[in-house]
Image 1 (cartoon, rainbow, N blue to C red):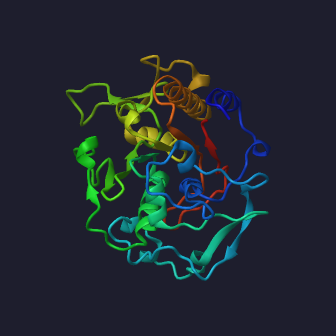
Image 2 (cartoon, one colour):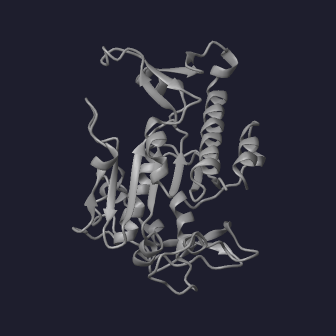
Length: 322
């Protein structure tokens, strides 16, 4: 599906019947890269080689969870190098971990087995970027754990400085992380952007009390600056689109550089739709004009993921731009 068609799809209001529930998370799409029946090559891979589509008649979105004694792919106790304690289920009060020993089984076909070394080989000389909220952060951390099997990797380098990823004033963690696997020249990064909007202080001389302009029609500044260095892009947003989050962060909705005065547009659902429409249209234009080899995905909302949170199953859709 071309980006233009995708924009038109998102331009209308989604109903429950319009959504396709996909239980696998965004990085599962990247498993397509490690198709088991293809021989691994060590030379530079073409675009067709590093993205392997499912065979005809196979839809990875349709299937069921089946028990697998070879799971999990990493230990929630052991993957301390990448996994934040606050999101590590093994470090919570939960006692039932039987869910870890399941894998996704598509209908009428097989999902390729994930092997970290093969994944990195297919991602040789590539950069993978997750940009979004805490769900995107968990996808990033889980992918790092999957690649390394949860074992400490001293040769992996922290290169956050190359992307100016720092701990902002008053923050308890950095705006993201970026790691480099030297033996395949593969970079995997995450950047925090809860709404996928460009957000900037209205009064730069008083950051402690100023409101922040939340530009619904602009991509995050980080994405604008570094998109051309990215080969695989996974975007997500969802749970921060509520009045409580906007008030707590002092975000003021803007369009065309000005505060929104249209009450209908300022409704949360309409504002979110405009933002998604805008960023997809922008990424699509960049792919067309400057970055034709970029592979981009948008992942929508999913159940909440915090301790004692109520998971509301909504659309969990992964849609490729091209």
